[in-house]
Image (cartoon, rainbow over all chains, first blue to last red; front, side):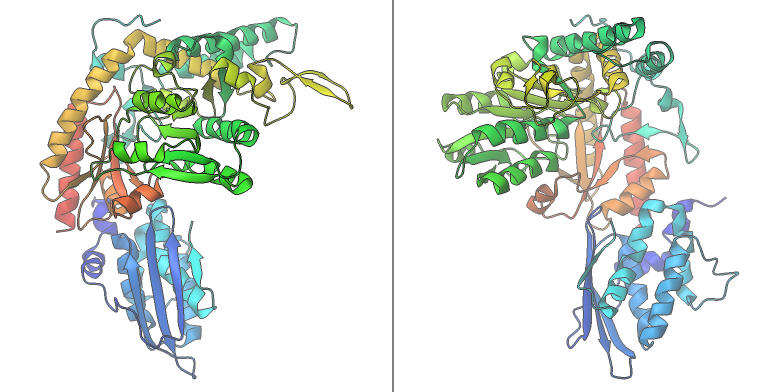
Length: 151
Length: 411
């Protein structure tokens, strides 16, 4: 019925691509990591400010990439702000399953909220890495990796 | 021999390629990714099948019927390649896995034997990674220095800069004939003549040239010429290294094994003669025979007819894409082959690739294995439509319409 393009490039994604949230270098970041997809040239850096109670007080990203990677990074920063590191890691796991098509957000319990918009991306195997790039970078930052590559 | 028919009929030609009747996402396939690989005519597919069904055996080994048959067809292809690129002897044709392996053989064999610490190796700013990395590896090993001929904003070599770089310190030039990312046709004949005045040998990376125009290695006077079968409508996994006989004959083998020896004892091995000396192990027999069928097929059409049709497509495609607001072509050289790379300000090439794919259109998006070139043009990636003789103006119209639909989505 519908054009699969519309499924992938939903209004929310296009809007986040055009006006990415928290798109800046974060002063006073406690953690940061680069995400790089050499296949398509997507390249971004994720910054986190984690307080002693292990709560992510602030999160931001910078870099260049396709609409999917930029929108995903933007939505991730919104989702992670205020979460504990442990909650963030759980969300990372769920998001990772979602984009690989291993989690149906309508049937299985999850905390993805608006992030479930990426549920259709596994129909586009070449694009899964675009959606997960910023998450890999955030996960790497939390785990003290300086750069991650998704190729 | 070029025995081309005098009429070029694209509708008839398209029937020779079974995959062109495929539908992608419910739409007829529009295949515009020919610089990545070309499609295969039925005659090539049938020929490979025939080898496996009726001729399967190893070459240069058996005295039995099948082995002799396979050897005959395998070696016949060497003759076809010789004619196709106008080499002077069949021994100058070495079968490899592809362009990449051909270049690596020269770097590892010629490079290790003849290049010394402090020698310059000259390449251009538009090389594919396969004509950069083998030389970097050699530079690291031998202490040579890689020098790069710069290009202008149209994607053309800057000749005065080339002349400045071409000093007696240069001991090897390796240059792409047609750029896979830009479509630029380099003046390789002129480059070779200039290098030869200083007695510098030249390798031509012909991966993107063989399928677009007739090649005459004697006229070019290149010392080495490398290309891949799969970009010449043949199978993947087979390629060619051409070298002038005396040069090839001076090369030590880079791989040892079967076929490349004359005699082996545990004390001493003597090597076989050309071309076998540089072809260790069982080759890709089906691939080579398939490549022969591809050359036969091309000879029925004629490379000149192909070049003519493609230059009409290029002119039409350039005009059509330029008419799209805000579209910027990357690669606007005066001498160009039918490759159209482009970027749009608000649509990342990766998104473009996904969007046009939904219309059944196959283009390549990314850095095209030319990352330094992307830096040169200050883009992370481009979208690239690369054409072949079975493409049509209608397909270019469909590409343009699909790009416009992508623009609407991203507006």
